[in-house]
Length: 366
Image (cartoon, rainbow, N blue to C red; front, side, top):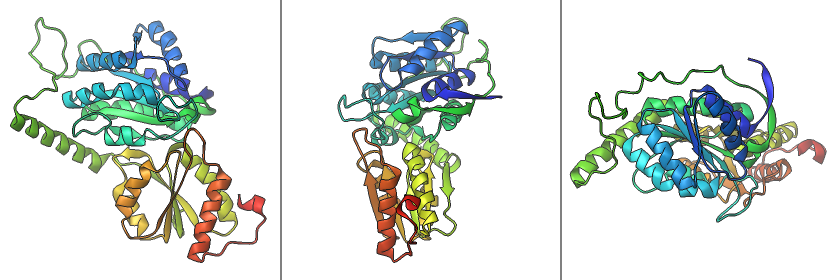
C-alpha cells in the first residue's frame, strides 16, 4: 500500500473501517472529533452502521449492544467523554464482549482544555469503572502506530472477548504524518457471528449475555475466571520498545508522545557522551513488568517522563522497587515536556551519577 499524509484521527478511523468495523457509535468531543466526522461519511458509504449518539453514556451502551450481537464495533472519545463511559465499560467487562475504544486524551481534570495530555493513564489502565476488571491498553507513539494498534485492538478484543483501548493524546490525534493504511478486510458474514453472540430469538440456540451474578459464590467464580483470562493475556501480549539501552547507565521510561519527545532529548545527550536510552511500554496493560525489572538491574538510574503528574510513575516504582533510583519529570494540563527540559533532567541525573558529560555546545546537547 502507498504511504499517505494522514491526520491521526482520520488515520485510526479509516484503520478501524479497514479492520472490519461494522458499527461505530460516538459523540463529538475535541480533540478527536475528526474521527467521528470521518466515520459519519465512510460508514454509510460502505453500508455499515454509524450513529452519533445523544451522549457518551448512550454511545458506550450502543457499543455494548452491538458487541453482544457479535458485531465488530467501536467508539472514540476524549477524557471527559471517556469518564462518562466507565459504567458501560465495566458492564462490558462483566459480560465478556469484545469492543474497541480509542481515547484521544486532553488536559484535565474536569473539562480542562483541548491540549494533549496523558492523564487518563490511571483511568484506563487500572479500570475506571467498578469491579476487578482489566482492559488491554495500547499506547501508540506515531500516526503509523495509531493505525497499526487500532487494527491490533480489534484482533485482541475478539481473541480474548475483552475491551481493547488505544490510548493516544491530542497531539497524535491532530498531527499529520506519512503512514500506510492496511488493506480492506470485509466485515463478518451474516452467518459468521461468534458462537456466543446473540443473534435474534427465532431458530437459534439460547445464549445469555449478562454481567449479573446475584449469588456471591457464583460472582467469585466468575471473577476467578476473568483473572485466569487476564493472566493468559499477560503471558502472551506484552509489547515494548528498547532504544539505545545496550550500554545505557540511565534509562528514560516514557510512552506515547512523551516517548517521542524523550527520543529527541536522548539523541542530543548521546552526542554529548551520556549513556542514556529509552524504554517505551507499548502495552500499558499488560505492563512490561519483567522487562522493566531486568532493565532496572542493568542501569544506574531511571527517569520517568509523562504528560501528567506521575501516573505511570507509580507502576515503574512498584516494578523497580529499590534496584535503582527512579526520578520523574512531568508536565500537566496540556503542557508538553520539551526535549530540552527532558535533556536537562537527564544531564542532572548523569552528574549525580558521576557520568561524563562532554563539553559539546549546549545546542548539540539539547
